[in-house]
Image (cartoon, rainbow, N blue to C red; front, side):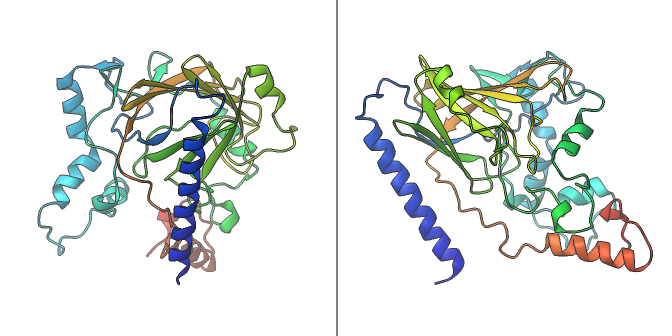
Length: 339
């Protein structure tokens, strides 16, 4: 049996066991908690930050349709559904190559802007009012420095490439929608809330408690910084609150080692969960910022994420850098390497 089939069987077994645990949890002493279990998607064309030229958070249906029709991936899906003249070379422009060199078949961002509370939204960010991440001038550089990889973005070796590119880690808090793999499975037990991520095959295993005081007392000692940060949770009425601190220095998140992300999960309809988040980190941002997005129930199960299977991008990047170095060049951008 191939490694891929073995891993697929193990993943299926793990999901089955999670489902059994979730079902048994419903008969436990905490069955008054809101039921968040199931398979969900936050697939949406709504970007994290508001597009240039858009002034309002809430869009009319006509505005949402116009913006979605301008989306490059929606355009490519329509283009590539028609016959393609393969004799025509790709455009030399980097931005054109970054999209048209990627088959639209493999992306799944949705076909329309997302709704929250029945309203089309122009951005996931709702605060500040301009819908933009309020970076300090030095914030992004500081985040990169605190990642423990001073050469992130360089091509000196495998270790300098980001973990997402190396297929090690998926989406950490903040869990906004992306270009593909937007399906997630939520599993509840008496003592844990588990988020099985399609993007990167990771599972966020979050212990839950009766009070925020109990939860915060359960944080690991500060030197221990788990992947995706250290997350604890508790229930307040019909909401699950999750706090995350102590981000791992090798994983770039939306917080530094001293920041905090607070996430809220609330079931607002049989087929909808309202997901809200707040980011607090004075070392990176000029103010606290927040966002929200709707998760929709889906019959689709998460796919197994097998990113390394036949993935030649990383060897190609490193080989191109070595070729450039053999000629005495210093590579700052791999696109500078002559073919």
